[in-house]
Image 1 (cartoon, rainbow, N blue to C red):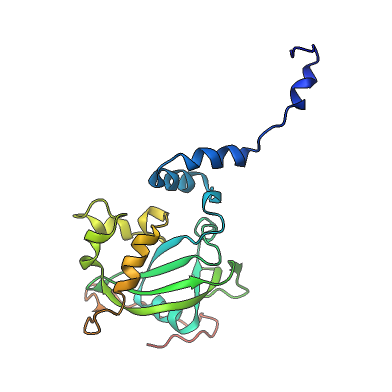
Image 2 (image 1 turned 30 degrees about the horizontal axis):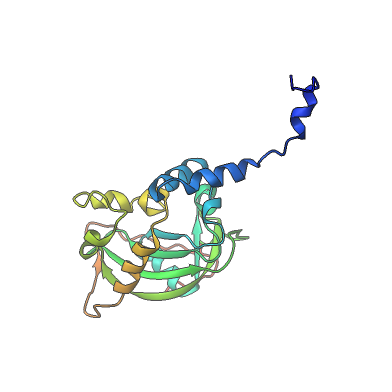
Length: 211
């Protein structure tokens, strides 16, 4: 009951929006805590209008499709919904020797449901503008990357459809990787001999594969 005796008077006070309260609360948190909350809840408003930076693990065959055709695709909506136009991606090759980053790109479109999947079981696609290509040995950069807290077991940070446990990395970490790409023109990599080559079938909707 309010002072006026009218219970409805309480609604006369301006009510802050839920998002406004959350935004104010998020501003008070350290960056790593923000990422944990965003990842758990799906919230991303604290970075509205600013690009996020991601590491995308992919295998050699899919990387060749990406760089030839300027697309990337995801199987799950949970991964799709993390991206927006303007975000930056770094591609990390799985099962390569040595382990390498091979390119950086900018997301240039919203995700769309492709009429024909970009590749099998990955219907959600978006277009990319390649910013830089070239190999950078991951092992030489681990000491400089702040998101890799356990420097001994760094491989765990590069698992899944998005590295860093499905969380973005900092702009500083992105720039460290970007600057290193193609810095050593002599660096070569190959498919890990224990990795079985994926058989590319005729269900890539006519996209050029190429090597």
